[in-house]
Length: 270
Image 1 (cartoon, rainbow, N blue to C red):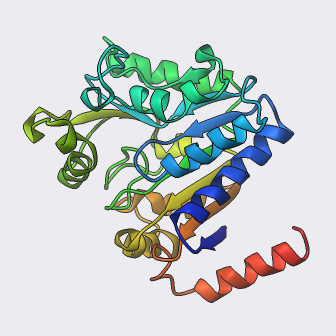
Image 2: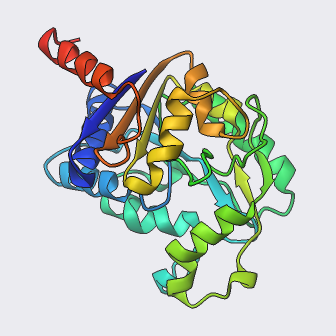
């Protein structure tokens, strides 16, 4: 596991975008797994900037981690009135780069048969050849996507009930400013499973801010547990990269080791 620590959110975002851009340049038909939430917004802004400078997304495919159940994209609504993750991705990335619409995949929160849709989504990922790079955040309780505490570490794409902390966090981050009452928020989501995520060839996890410091330390250096589903990064059989800002890294016990390894890799161009 590579742990990269940057001074602030902007530098963290730039580093993550450079990792993604390097893959897009070397494999123009790569498959990216994408995340929503506040953390990756800076990374997406950097990718948009790179696209304006010539980075070509026309051959790539994308699969998003999750979507609220009961919500679907409505481009006729103002952004703050449509809280779907499909809308988020359209606004924050897709409409600003030259990706083909048919190559973007976000779980359908309005699927009439959600369980069958989950199986279809898994099949589409396999049909695309699997995910080359999966971008990940980490929830305040240590979850990946909507794999809430207690989720199986071998789980697949499925419908998952949201726990109280996730609902509270998302309300403060998104729904409150849109004037949506907490009781009107969705309480279920479609999410890629931990097992699905672990099949990606390269997992890139981002975290910033002091409020994520404790849970990052538990995920990276604590026990492997389904109560902190992001701790499954310790199981990832492929390449794993964690990009943090200084504050999010502040409670890591092995921080000097991570910095030493990064210096060595830069010196020897590994």
